[in-house]
Image (cartoon, rainbow, N blue to C red; front, side, top):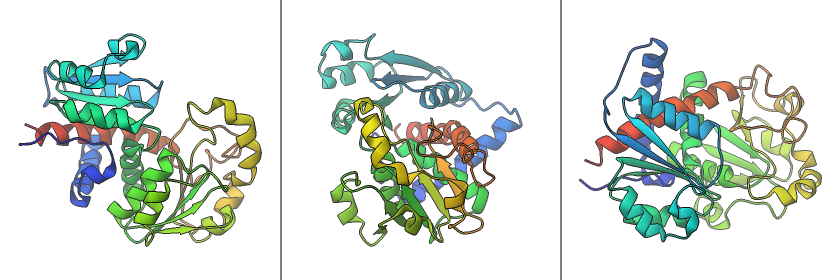
Length: 303
């Protein structure tokens, strides 16, 4: 059996993605009932972080422990990766010592090259280009709240960043339509937009994009590594703030999501996260459950 990796949503079929989400729901139910499920005793998750995180580290580390295994935190400051060891050498060594690896880094090419030389499954825990684990959590959240997202209209507002790119892939994999509203010059990957043009509608204004949507999603205006652009982006993105008033343009039962952390008074108004249509706290929790399902899937299908 070949090694299965999860570098983008496209690495799994629609049926496999839906299987993982359903399993995430089941594992969440077990967790809330305090039922112990430890299929991976004595197995180890290696967690490589070049970008800092709260939700990603806690969800993966807690998840692996709950599955009966252990997790090792590795930052670029504490390993040879940060001192210039070739990626392929690190992959060869680490994958002989642990059973599965997650990487949170800047360049997608680093992740791709690491997985090429790894003997165990590799998970994309975020790059500048994609954030597929967050999409699994988002899709689980929508399923729990509203059922299947197939045929629905999702709207992305803000920067055409890694989350926006991942929503484009999700539109293809989960069969929904995607509206995108970004300032000029901040669009998602052009190649992705062309590849999935039948799924995507580029809107001129956020208001036009949100109208009649079933799900509205946004993210910070400046991601990690873009700190020097914060002031300029705040001016450019000013009209792209999501508020309850903007959400009123969506369907009555529309949901609002944000991968967090959020900057109130910037991409969201002060009161948006606590609006009844906001499911950001459920969305954050579901990182834990759906990533456990992902780990289970990859370990089971890579033996």
